[in-house]
Image (cartoon, rainbow, N blue to C red; front, side, top):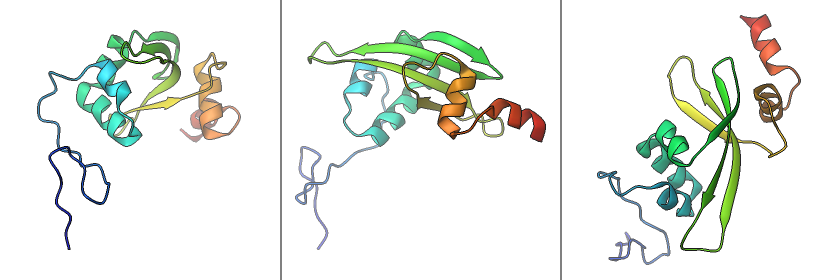
Length: 132
């Protein structure tokens, strides 16, 4: 038998029900970061606009190279006790122009070391140049 969702957006089985976002005016960095489901949070970031999200979150560019940007930002939640420090590598797929953001450890300070860490290799950019 098919489960019917309740008014609160939770089915009787305990599953959370998400609806398509049609009005993005109410989205804020704080609302996005407060979302507990990471897949939904990423979708919300894309709806909000990744560049806009990073800008509104106060991201500072630490390093840029070959179309990649290493950014650093803090997100504080005024309604809770936590704040979050994030260092991430922003990448753009050259064929689809889709943005990707991968978090990296806070001690990484260059795009090159971030790429090496993400792909678990040495000299990732050098390998790309050799393949081109």
